[in-house]
Amino acid sequence: MTPALGERRGRVGFVSGCVMPIFFAQVNDATVRLLAANGFEVITPGTQRCCGALHAHAGEREEARRLARQNLEAFAQAGLDWIVINAAGCGAMLKEYHELLHRDPLLRGAAQQFSDRVLDVSQFFDRFPFRGPLGELRLRVAYDDPCHLLHGQRVKEEPRRLLRSIPGLELMEVPESDWCCGSAGIYNLVHPDLSRQILERKMKHLEAVNPDVITTGNPGCMIQIGIGARQHGLSAAVVHPIELLHRAYLAATAKHVPCP
Image 1: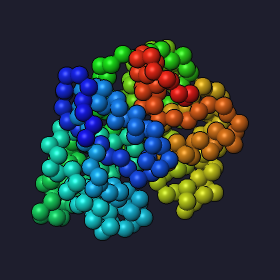
Image 2: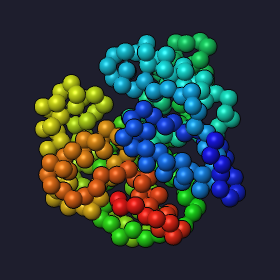
Image 3: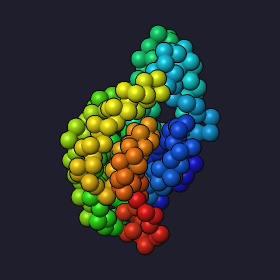
Image 4: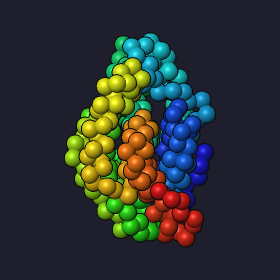
């Protein structure tokens, strides 16, 4: 449990995910720190498991159901107001637990309650605006919509409002930002050639905008676009939106600010 800083506003559960701790541990750290700084106790159950998204994508629905049942149990007794996730693909899956388990007479009610409390981290900070100070970040930032956030969860404006809340940050709209980058769960593994073609179209638009930073809220998209940026010789870092909010918070509190 990570205690809330200042006046306590509630208690949230944090879904740490499978890919995020391995490839993007700094995003998870920033998420927990910002949730706590915003007045929320953060519970990260050690017994949580994979959300089951990749299993569901591959047609392994029974394994996805088994994992969902384990996660319902892991978060059940924590007395949570909300469940926060920073990976769009995982969030889309968690919000569908009620559909995945709708034929389970013992757990369908719990699954519905669980799904109803899941918020992408951008939704959370849109509903509970960050109350800490934010320093200035003079950056030209291109935001790209993860498909599982925009199309899977219908979340579009929340991450943009989060980015616009950062002083000094210039949010740049990118043509076809609502198009897939080619990652698409396991699509880039099972259809690599077409995935690269989709990425190439995405990178031409990003290259034309020439941002300082590219930001997107899903690990698969971050990896995919990061590969594209290196192939195209772009100097722009590829980061999660929450990293930029965290950097602004550190700037305001006179702490070390990492490069974007």
